Length: 462
Ligand code: GLC
Image (cartoon, rainbow, N blue to C red; front, side):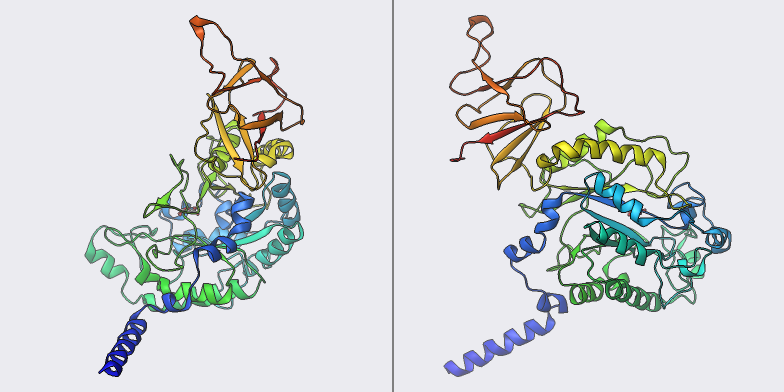
């Protein structure tokens, strides 16, 4: 009787495990293991996104083919002229590093289907343009040589492949179901799915260890969209985890509910109000942002963020436990344009003295409220807390509730001591409480730093 029960249980477990998607069986990782796999990324905090392709020639957004509803024939001239003669990835890597970035992610293929890498499965690639070489190979080598981690972006959308089913985001999108049907006659998404798998295998085997993968993107809701079944996201995931077990994967495969289906979430051009959560648990996150409104090089785009906005973006991201992936869209000649270079240099200038308040930092522990017009970050290992003074206060900076919690305070950029003051005892304006608040006495003149940072060495007991 007992034996029968056990047998039944065994059979039941077997059936269950056979019906589970392959991924859930093969990808088992504890929360602690995941944390460890992602540790370098969470510590590094700051990376460079690079959107580069033949859309750099029209220089009016990487979606230009779709925006202007160009056909393959109309778009072909950019392919035929693509010749980035000034391409020098070592120079790019140097600029990224000097800006304080620790990793970089480049588009191997974007939505237009053009591949910067050499692929056995298409002719639509850099090696067949006038530049005539695998641009990804050089890029990977150059960035690694600067000690940076390397990541690949690969577009799931493809506006060039003849078997990609035309959907609502496609340059040739239709206005009725009948029209879609007619347009898609003879197209076989199964062939495209296989193409993606083949290319994914190529980019994940031909370039050594890849640290990050960005698969972009799913749009399953509504009509004529695409999601996990269209891409065979589970099949792709299996390839990714098999070929690069250490890789860190974004969340755009439409597999949010699948074990190992994503590692971090990606608020795009969007400022989150707090550390993003899923099912009540804080999740790893990275906001990707442009300097201006476009990812690809856009000559006439004028809404460039200034250095203050960019630094605030970086600081604020870290203060909520996230990473920042800041994008550059190199030109058709293969250069970072002057607006991007200028901003990278200014960020680098700030990072040179203040990166200690960024790397390995995160949200502050509970119980610390930031003073007016400031943001705080915290390094749990060194137990140091950083106050980023967005608006420089007039001499006295009251840290509410900090009394007894701080051993020492200094400016981060020059390591100069900041003395503690006594609360003012005047009944009419008794704002500070001696037993609760800590008062910092700052120099009246703002130091020559875009956003000065105060480093607080906390008491050990905290
Ligand atoms: C969107 C856009 C794309 C860009 C990406 C970056 O998915 O389609 O152009 O590459 O965001 O996150």
